[in-house]
Length: 414
Image (cartoon, rainbow, N blue to C red; front, side):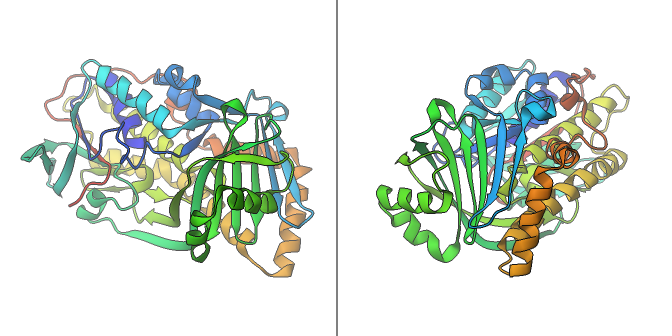
């Protein structure tokens, strides 16, 4: 989703862009536009509005007007109300497939648009002094592409990032997210719930028609059994963990399991390469910040490219641009990674003293409006330098180029 968003952002700049995508967006095998949903922050909504993508997404989006955080079996809880923050909503829940359809429809209709290679795989990537060289395989044919800049947007296991020499640190949380849709008896009233249990966090996000997306985090050892439970057994276990704030859970949809880990590229760039989205950092879904952080990667990079597009000669892969991109993303990236990883570690700690402190912390947070405002700014990236697209400012047009940007994403193999 991040790679497609960047391609849409670059489309009006009259630069030559190639998009290399392994799996069509409407395929059941597409790993980005799958059964999951994404919680979009207000900053992300504004970016999509500025890109003219939001109108096609809005009808499939459900507003989050309140957030309720609790710790199972403990007294601590915290509430965040959009109205108290002067906002219409804290964010919006959108099905990944709906967002993917909107982005790709817009990208394919763009004029002049991007040249799209799909399905295609990168089989070789290297950085030379003045350009990046890729070899891709598409429809049984090998094609060579030269570009001033290659953007690695190909996920946590990015082959482009690895081929260009950027190492990635990874920490296995030994947890798996079981994701499905549930229907509670009571209407969710546009409240998103985050409940921490001894086995891992549980999130319920509001959807249309009173349904909720469920993200149930389990220890890896318990996943096989949970996937084998009958619907009645699954709903009974969910009820035990969540309680009756929404009454009884009536129905559950198909379940999908996703292993969880933290990954962090050692750098967000390499010679002739920028690294964005999950290729730069893959987060635990505990706070729903992963895509929003990646979208700010794309918005920041697109702005830097747009700012230089009128220069002659134009070089989107120059070291100065990449250094500025690294510096711009550093604080936002480190802050969000530390916050999400800290949440997972804090609420997984079984020590009684830690449990008491975290519950006191939740209560203190609930009574501190400035803390809620600070968290809202962190979640939307509204600290430090904010991308133009997130401020509702469209990117300026540049000039036509002989060589441009190659955007690689989606399960590529070196």
